[in-house]
Image 1 (cartoon, rainbow, N blue to C red):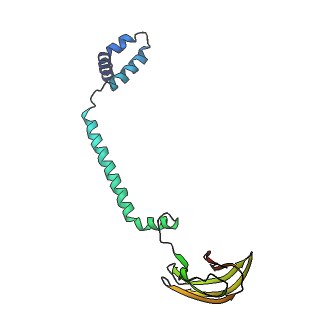
Image 2: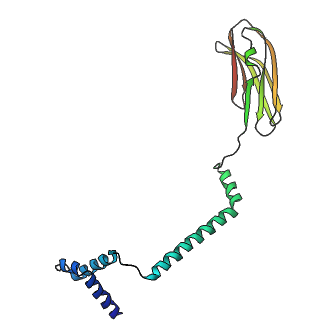
Image 3: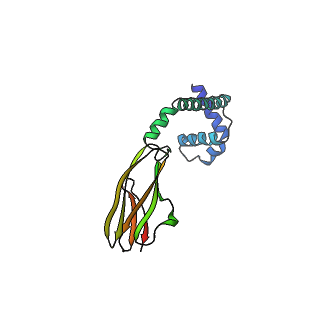
Length: 188
């Protein structure tokens, strides 16, 4: 061990003798330490076994990536279920459409009114829709019709309404309260 240290020390002195000469005033221990750093940074080729270690390290990293990938592949269904529980994966959302069947044919004047509207169920399951038809004039609400309709998934219902409204202007509103949807038109 002592011989190896002497050999290493003498090799460092030779390779960095210039550095030692410039720093003679420095503490010899510090100078030797600096020489060691300078010699290691001087671009000396590492021993041959370091190249083998790099290859072995690369193989281990590739092997670890392969194991992690195969474990994730095997557990993908469970992983998807957990992500879906936290709503981190996209999923279909059901909607309900509410619209007038023929918006060009809506009545414009008060009196005998007749129109129809459509409720389309795109929720993915059979739904029961309560709806309300009312008029609004000068901040007052007058209910004209209240009913419930059951619609199968993917189907729609055309609801025809006919009633008489006095000679006042205002809005006719159709509302699905549970879906928080409203459509309206004006009469004069």
